[in-house]
Length: 216
Image (cartoon, rainbow, N blue to C red; front, side, top):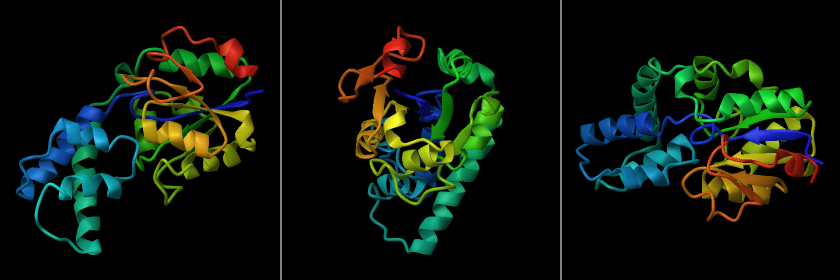
């Protein structure tokens, strides 16, 4: 039986992909990298900030020290944080708030499992921070998906076993991480039918058989 649902953030509850893309593109152009595209940005989905930086840097021909890379990642994040100032509850994806409220009414615990260190800020700005029992994000972890660390941390905070948790994800790395952690998974987003999840739906507003999922 599923007693806790752990959500990824970007692409599941809210979409900040465009903001991430614009911030990384701004950094890339400052570094003289003009070939960074939205296709490259898709490869950054679900992974850590430093792993995302490598996607940008591989488009150039310069080598950077670890210290320089840390500075570049911080610079990009500062651009992104400024863009987040415009984020409101209107930026929630379809069904996000309704699903969280429904789970609380059923007595199901809710957790967040996101690689983003900015997750708490995003949840607050979109008005759903209070709907989460526990948060696991880039501030709690050192390993990127498909490593299951971020989900295992969330399960531990919820005081649940992996078998009692369902992960909701929109990326292949996230679905793979859920499987590696011994958790059931629900895939949403553009690739929801192709990721090999236990369950799938176009988005959280789509027909999701929660009775079947939670009682599995």
